[in-house]
Length: 146
Image 1 (cartoon, rainbow, N blue to C red):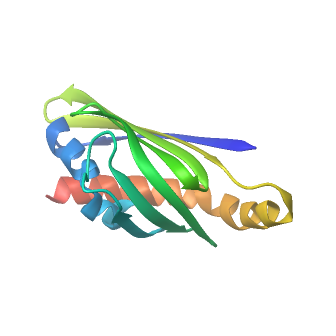
Image 2: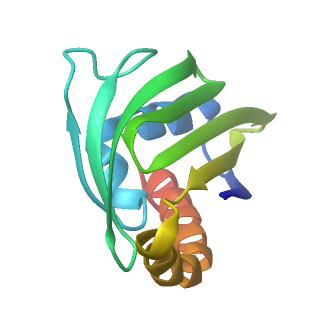
């Protein structure tokens, strides 16, 4: 069964700065809750085709190989898993004027079925709300502090 999480934040920074910050994989662990590891596995490190291995720790370790499947400067970053825990993350960026940006996150994930999947779900589901709130707060705080 798939689950979808959606969340929006406003950041007091121009869209170009916000996009560049989110697009820089080397900074992702600074703001994404639970991200334990992210390593490129391709020479390309941003834009469509950039591929990474990642480990999220949300009560249990969740491993995925992810690839950028959508990228439009200052407007969109979409990442989808190609191996491991099935997930898609879509980040859209809207210039609100006056140096403000809205970031809309849409995240879909599917945990494995069977007893193992139920065990993972029972560990992960209570943490999702905390993860979304913490990720949003960190993203706003880190970008606005730059």
